[in-house]
Image 1 (cartoon, one colour):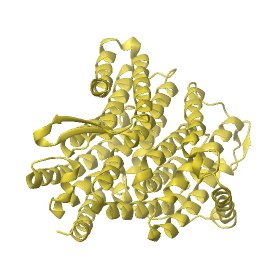
Image 2 (image 1 turned 120 degrees about the horizontal axis):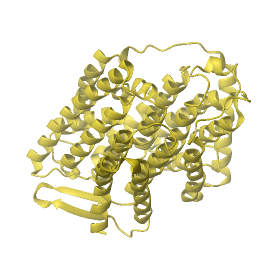
Image 3 (image 1 turned 180 degrees about the vertical axis):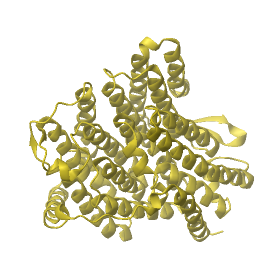
Image 4 (image 1 turned 30 degrees about the vertical axis):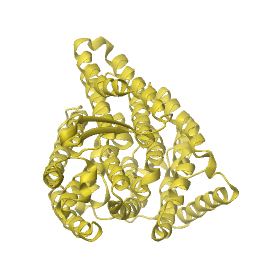
Length: 479
């Protein structure tokens, strides 16, 4: 299994190189990489114990894959495959497919790392490849958005790298477990980098503009997979170092609330989905034990919604309310929206139920309120009028079949959550959310300020969050 793991980790980068040599096979080679990840992820669910691979033992450079990694890798495989199929009959060049498979490979690497230096390399490679995908149209707007993303990302990783060095200085190892004995500033610097990369809390307010202004398949890839490369290490650290768990949970609740508050009042479809991504990432952090399954549920639904939003006649909800959309496209919107809202028989229901079962007492009330907020947000899509709209782009249905198919199939994992109480609670929550939407938010025209999203404020927010993290680390790490 060790040899298979190393081959699986290296395969996407080999395929990216091969695409340049044989450009006529670009999409086939890229799809092959996602199939390999899919098969590998399924193997992880039958492992009896985590697989550990020591690359540089003296430096604590190790890989570890287990069931948690399996959920994240499976999400990466399915979402990337869907994006490739969506672009299959488009005019995308070999360059696009190369960057897509490099993003896929580097994100996979992040899901296997358990040391800070390997993670740094994986996150930097994924950041550069994502930058190239965002800038792919080469318009002035896309290049500016991509450069903004790259600058924020690299600044965050500078914070992170200094923190990683402090961990090594304290432990002679880069392993995640070194956080326990590292100085509080190490945790503060590492976590501020990961919070930015993952789009968590106010550190993630670069995300709405970046995801909404990218091309449709790139938006699906970013929200479905790429941001989770920053969230996964937070989850893994919380599981390895129990003193870190309260910090991760607090940021989980904070980001769940922040994202949903902004999303409720947003009238642009892609910005609303991007803001909702911030909120949904909070659910992954709120209960680290079930973060992997929730990441799968969110990645499948959110990618479906971004791909579908790219086929709507307008990005403005007010205009869409007066422009009937293609009925089959509307059905896709409804299914994906209901999953994120927590409807039974869809993966989102089981994911939410498992998270709720693993919450600490102080988390229960705020996260139940956040559920109602999520229902209100996605009611915007559900209550759009269906009709005779334009047909979707070629490749749309192939991608949607994969995403929605697994959105139903993966529900098997959470079969134990199905009982009368949980089903009734989910249905009542959805009904309350729809009622509140119809009575209040459907007619709301409030616009929240975007000052914190402005480029000049993003770096300042990093500094403020690092101070907050230092204080939290000082308290919880008992230094």
